[in-house]
Image (cartoon, rainbow, N blue to C red; front, side, top):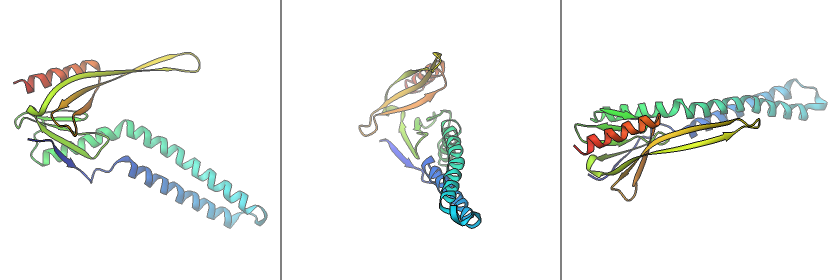
Length: 191
């Protein structure tokens, strides 16, 4: 079987949420502008109105925007993956193993890559998978007072026999978790 691509339009990306947030913030800021026109003295109406608009916009948009960023990095990928697993289950895919970005149906010998920042799902057979390997990236941050922080990001890289989409990456919680997925893929595919 060739790589099957499923596009789920009902799982909206965060871009649509950011547009709604921006529109909401602009409406509230315009409401503040209207109120400042109505209730401010006539001699300083433009300056005060503009000040209300700017303050209203930034006091609303910046906290909401950071809330969206926190949501995007933590809760959104897991929720998106869960919604995709539900879609797969509803369409006859038995999810025997899953991690953020991948689902495996052992009985049908299929793998679904549930890209968590996309509305796409890619499904392929076990025999389409050519290789898999753990990948790790360490990010080092030096603060202004000289403290050094390091953060490891672990994932598994899967190469498949498709020239259009030859590689998929799914995240792993730790280096041990990535190695566990490597062993699982080896056991399932080399059966």
